[in-house]
Amino acid sequence: DAGVIQSPRHEVTEMGQEVTLRCKPISGHDYLFWYRQTMMRGLELLIYFNNNVPIDDSGMPEDRFSAKMPNASFSTLKIQPSEPRDSAVYFCASTQQGNTYEQYFGPGTRLTVT
Amino acid sequence: ELKVEQNPLFLSMQEGKNYTIYCNYSTTSDRLYWYRQDPGKSLESLFVLLSNGAVKQEGRLMASLDTKARLSTLHITAAVHDLSATYFCAVRPYSGGGADGLTFGKGTHLIIQP
Image (cartoon, rainbow over all chains, first blue to last red; front, side, top):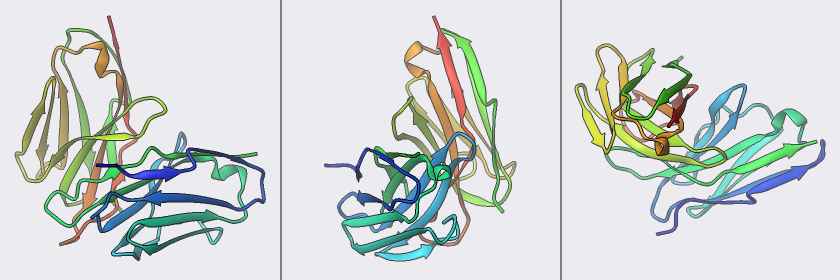
């Protein structure tokens, strides 16, 4: 089975540009999470969805960040306008209703904003 | 606010030795996870601990959970070089039901030298 798929794997953009990160969860999983990893702040939850509905977006840094999940197999995280401090690795993870709620992580998108 | 503390944050050890990584968390939780991350890679799930006294073992790694002390340990037995990585514990805040975003510790960067 395919794992969580993210694209692009690397993104380099200039400050002020719009950036869109994409994620395809594992088929059948009904929860999707976006995390960000930086050296300074470690791994942080940004937002998560259940059945395509945003449940907790309290980790979204500010209005420049937005996330959508239009269907069960696709989610986007958009940053507009991007800033150098947004440089990080962005991970998408998914899990399914059950006992463990073990989260499976995608390969990540390494974003560099210059 | 849930806080997760790992120690040590850096650990250099010799092959063949034993060591333990500690993970303390600040509020009630019903699920604790251990992940491994290799440099430049994603997070790989190692263990899911669901209840007080839970112990799980895989190869040279053994994880345990004491919910009363809010403490989990990851014990490494007879370390080998291939275990060099960063290890994260992550805690799901107790919320009754359903999945939830995880709060991660800062990670333990483990280097095992021949």
